[in-house]
Length: 547
Image 1: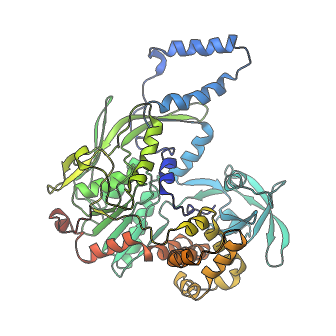
Image 2: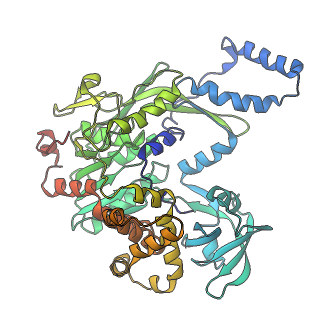
Image 3: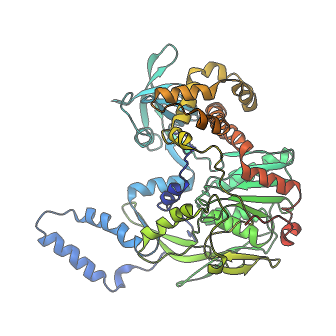
C-alpha cells in the first residue's frame, strides 16, 4: 500500500485517532505480578461462571471476555490497553519494522488494484511483476471492480513467510492477462522515509516512527548525509507518534556528550531507571533543529525534550501531543496482550510531559486535541497558559515547562495558505492523489524515463496538471471555483508534483518537493544558517522567540 498517509486538512481528527495507537515504551520493565492473589478476582470468576450456567441464552464466554477487557483496562488511563491477538500482529509488525508479504506498493484506481512500485529484490520483482500492472485476481477471488478497500487488499496479499499467492495480472497497454505465483517473504518497513540535503551543508531526516530497526536506518542516513557535506541536521518528528524507548535513547545519544541524561522513568512499583549518553555519538558538534507538531508523541517527545533540556539545539513547530506514560506488556497464550501503564517518563530537567487526564474520562481526553484546534493552538500562538504548567530549567538555566507536552522554543503556526472549501473537497475525496496516480499511469513510459526526480519535477512544472485536475474533479462532481482554485494553486501544484514524483522516485522525491514550500523547514534552515542552533546560542537565548 502507498506508505504515506493521505493528506488531510482536519488535523484534530488525526490526533483523536492516534490515541488508539499502542505506543510501546517500556519493554525493559518486569512483568507485573500474577493476578491470582488480587482481591476481587474470585468475584469476577464467580460472575462469569454464573453467566455460563444460568443466563437465558447461550453465551460465548471467551467472546464476552474479549469484549469486556478493553473497557476494563481503558478505565485506568488513556494508554493502558488490551490488544486482541488479531490486532497484536499488526502492532508487532509496526514495531519490528517488517511484515511478510509480496513486496509491492499499490493504489486502488478505478476499483482496480494498480501496482505503483516494487520492493527492490523483493518477491514480486523476482516474479516479474512491473509497476503499472493491474492485480485483478488473488488466488480464486476476482478483485477488480469490487470497490475493494486497502485493508482488504492487505489481508489478501500478506501472509506467512514462505506461503504462496497466485495473482491474476493485466498489463497495459496490451492488457494481456497472465497468472503469476509469488512466494511471500519478509518485507522491510522503512521508518525513515527520506534523508537528503536541504542546502550544501544542512541535512534533513524524516523519522516516521521509532521501530526496532529505526536506529540502524538513522545511522545510515547520517552517514549518507555527512558524505554529501552535511554539518548540521534538521530532524523532522512531525506526525511521529512514538515507538521503542531503546531506539530513541540510541538516536539521541548521537547528539549528546558522555554522561548527559537522556530520559528517566519512575513509577509506584518501579524504581527510577536512568538512561545516559555514552559519548559515542557521531554528531556531538553538529547543529540540530528538531521539528515537532501536535501529532508528535511519546518517543518523539523524549527526543525533543532531551535536546531542549541540554540546550543542545532548537525545537521548533507546535506543542507536542503530551504522552508521557510508560507501558509494560504481558502476553497471553492466545497471542493477545495487555499493555499496562507502570511508570511515567521524565525529561532530563525532571519534566513529565504527560498532559492532564482523569481516570475513566477517556472521551474528554480525546476531545482535548479537538479543543486545542478550536482554541486556535495550531494557527495562533499556543493557547496553553504557562500559569497552569510547572516551570523547569534547562542545563543553562532557561525556563521550560512540563505537564502538557513539549513546548517548542519557537512556535510556528500551521500553514493554512491555500486551504479553502474547494481544496478541502478535493483532498477529502482523495482526488489530488487519485488524479496524480491516473496521470502517472497514463504517462508511465514518458515519466519513467527521467534520470532524477528533479528532472521529472522540472518537466511536470511545464505541464497543465492543475488544469487537468480541475477538469477531472468537475467530471467527478466537484464544480470549478475559479477564485478558490487560484488561491490554492501553489499548494495543489506542489502536492500534485510530489504525488507523481513519488510514483517513480519514492519517498525521497516526495518529501524533497514538499519541503520546498514548508515554512517550518524554511525557519530551521534560517536558524542553522545564522548559527542560532549552536549550543552556546541556544543556552544564551540568542534565537528569536515566537511564542
